[in-house]
Image (cartoon, rainbow, N blue to C red; front, top):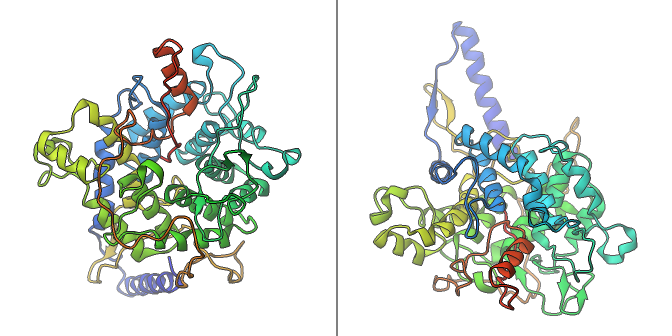
Length: 484
């Protein structure tokens, strides 16, 4: 919240309190209507909660998809919706830690997925559980043990997987690194090395690449990789992780987050939406949701509001849902998906895509930063003293860190970041700024309707595919690990 808004709110409440003291009666309080984007977020979360069965969400290959379940848990935690479902999901994820971050269920021992472990660490913190004893596992200690040490050279600080076999390059990406930074910041001291490695994934233009590796092996930094593809989703994740790191006092995190937010602004389409990279280049609710959440966290309220409006246009309601009106609250991946559902309903084949889209999209409506979920109260209605004008609800949570290099007020423990300056002119980048929304079409088929599998451990799906086809050569390639 900007300082001027905090001062105005504080003075207003002080006046009401003083008047109450004079009259001898407390002021009556009524609830102001929740902002439209908050109401939409809660409706989306309510729909998503109804998709849970016994504390988990299903996936395309199994009755429980733990990556997607974690995304759903984070989404429900961000909105405060359906406490019983949140509690059941937390308990189920805790019981299935090894089902998500290892191959133990398949009889293959000795492998621990670094990205999945980091995401579990973050999810436990966001769900207000104990990350050091989650299902009997100390996820903080495990995550720290998977951070590359100084002898790894320019890979120092990277979250990695542990394996007893030589499996080639590590599959971890910028999503995984962001979860490592978020989870470690939320559970104790944050090693500067993990922050530094994340910052090295940022190109001079401000955007972040998804993969730290080039074709011939790990590259030292984004700028060292010729033609690096900058990715909206990865940048949105990194901005939020770096905001949490800046709040924790990490060096360089605030400036990097500001540059990332500035770059995101250059990628916003005229209708407020965002697209990703590769098969998700077209405008979609996953990328828009993450970008809106990051922009709100960075204090870019106007751009975050425009993105939230684009998300609301993809949300089913009783009035616009047509044949899918029974699924009011759900958010489509894109306009094609929305139109198809309104005409014919959400089919069993498409429902998985709707779950994944809704879990990420509603974060852009709730606009609680990843670094603050579970710490700040979920956004709801705002109490207003009777007889006073209802305040305009802030687009960002009051306690979310912002970005600035100004010194902290006397008595504070650290800098108070804020992005109030206009975006800097971006340096040339391989991902050119988008000024108009491209046609929103369904991405090329990938076995999941074009939507990358949210948060799932990539190796697990590869193993499933290998088992299903008897050791054949066709692998199900899941390009990225999404946030929840």
